[in-house]
Length: 427
Ligand code: UD1
Ligand code: MG
Image 1 (cartoon, rainbow, N blue to C red):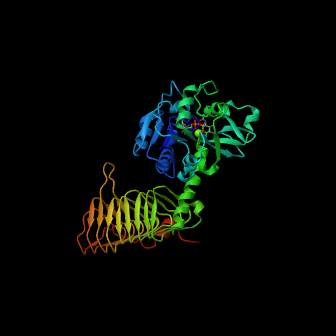
Image 2 (image 1 turned 90 degrees about the vertical axis):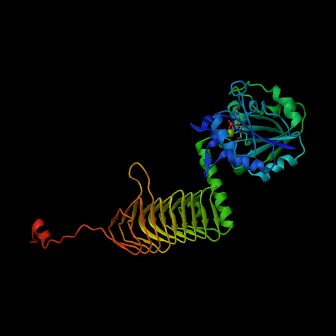
Image 3 (image 1 turned 30 degrees about the vertical axis):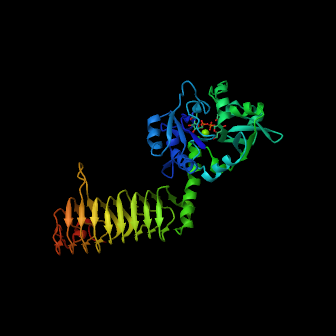
């Protein structure tokens, strides 16, 4: 049986963040979630080792069927120390770092298929910065030296430890108690097992893996690079399933967004936690936590959380929040918040639902076939029944019954020749 141990207890000092490293997100999902999800494709025996910000990381990790272990960071710091408290159950044990969000299950499977006492992951890099160096002599791995412990010569080695290892259970059982913290970081390094195993003539296989999938995220720069790769993967996934994306490099789609049917996304759009069905999201629009069906949005529209749009046209500079819009048109410059608007209704340019009085939020309800003239203010709570006309520029602070006209206007006064009296006549 394969057991996976995910190491996620470290402080992540190089991240320079008050947030635990593995909780940083790429495309809205945290690093630790990606690593757990890929591991679950291999086995249901998963241990996640935590310590730094234990409660916060635990809250995210325990959504999954895994076992959480708390590392004694004071007594046994380091990636080797992390495993001390874990009950070794599997005959083969795959160890992953929690800061490798791009890891893929089909590549991890390869580790268990190789017959060796230890299978370790090696990458050849032009810039080995941030990784432990792998000393190879005559084709055989000799040891891993952490960057902080490297000599000048060792720093030039292009082979690095990618941070994934498969150990036979007996190997871990034998060498874990023998680790020492006699190194630059005063930590118990898991990587020291390699040299000890070499000295005992154990069979060590080095699997060359690609940098993209095994990238370790240690800094915010690494995080940005990893997010770019993740976002590209997500977009390619959807494009292969029939979504048109214009200049995809400029589009941000998060891990929780899904598309159904033929959809089109314009350049510069940001779409998060949304479901897009048979719709077009035009350039530079931002959509978050929304369901959009058979509709056209933007360019330059903002659809905010808890919005549901069906058969609807939303034009430029329209902001929608927590609203249910069904079969309506809002072509220009509007704010529709906490509202429910029904079929055939036209929202004129500049319409605002005044949903907030400084203390509470209130709802605006508009029925079918309503014509809302431009620059209307709807003071919520307010109900506009079906077949109503609201004259342009009105402030509507009372409910309006079916079939009515609502008009509020300050009378317009026209003073003849006032301009010339005020500024003086020309010449
Ligand atoms: C580690 C490897 C390095 C490798 C690199 C690949 C060691 C000693 N070094 O270095 O050879 O090139 O990964 O990305 O293993 N962690 C714990 N408890 C701890 C310390 C760390 O659980 O006491 C966890 C961290 O949360 C992290 C992972 O282990 O998820 C790796 O720790 P990190 O500090 O990033 O190690 P690297 O310096 O990257
Ligand atoms: Mg790391």
